[in-house]
Length: 286
Image (cartoon, rainbow, N blue to C red; front, side, top):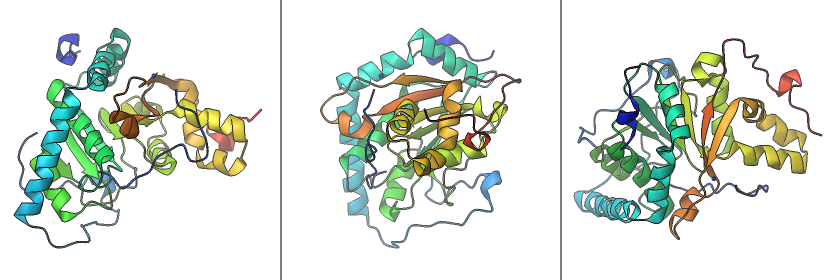
């Protein structure tokens, strides 16, 4: 294995119908704003550009200042110290190493970040992604998408080292290489799309997912026993038995709104694993 433990060194929410916060919300080389990525497997998706066509240096400077303050603020919180400690725990460290395999970098894809200009939770979420990249040299390029991103936000994201996608993948990025999907507080549909397009042993084993607790989704279904909800979460529920979940449970006052109910998810499947969805009646509500 090319990547060593040395390279890498650097918890439960209640579930109700509206437990997910879906807010308008939105890492470290300077790039030209004109450089945007279009993954090959997604070229058929509809092209996207910001709806607004105007921005100005003053507005961009103000947002950049907000982000720099937010990054510094988050870095000094108990939440961030606990978050780093969890990532470096031997059990989780081994999971990261297994996903990396012979690779030395793990790409990061951020979906549903929302408006970093308008709201603090999205700024905190982006700040966490940026700090992770700074702390761990195994995290590679950061790609970002949300359909509500403005031109100003796009330019600031680019200045912060991110690549803003030019298409709406709708969460359907195939994990052709080790990929960290950073998706706190996204809608269940995005997780479903991600799992569906990667519904195979090899692809799932290349994924690390940071987002809403799958355990909480399962609990929600077991409590409400709603067939519509079950059908809309069938891949989430089916993959639970192959998932190792690490819940994020330590928060500072500001971070709780941005990260409550979030978990790390690792998928552990072997070549003989029989992947079945709810269509195959593998998951039954008691």
